[in-house]
Image (tube, rainbow, N blue to C red; front, side, top):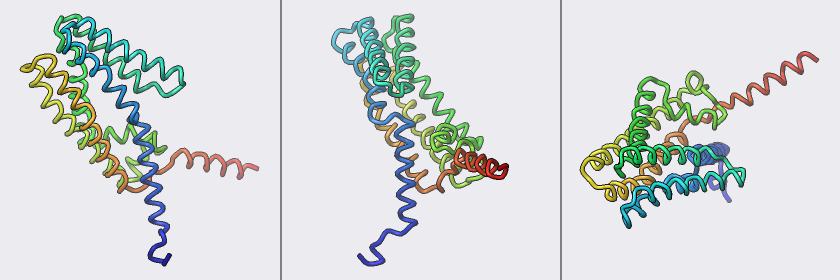
Length: 235
């Protein structure tokens, strides 16, 4: 191997930064299992409703599978935040659909949440406090240090928040007209089809922006080092 073939320290550091970014995104957004838990209740609802047009059976089945996924995570002592968020989302949809008697309303709370989240990403990006930074800062152990001490990462978080906001806004622009014009099964299958691709695109763009950004400042390590320094000085 020649000197040109040998990886440089910068290349190794860049690879390490990408690996850390991938791991953090995987943790923050739930990975493959989180995606399955997001899609399965809605898929079950629309599948059953397509066959028998029974709102009650479809709703109960969707809620039951969401609860089972939470129980499985609890039994395995896994992180339950994604499963719990899925249960709450399904529960709101079930309650809303049962109250109105309109099966399409099973999807309405989730659609409103998506629209609200899109606006939150865009508004926080415009305000200089991008939501993605608030979400991922603790995961990267940098908290809010990116706001004042790491402008490169703040810029990356802002771009990522814009990406998430515009992608979710585009998704909402497809779903809300279907809510008014399409029937329940058409809306349901389109919604299921749009669960994963926009999410993967947003996660990929987040990874691209952060992989090119400066590394995070580990504020926890800084605090530990400061405590060790004070302890050593007092001895």
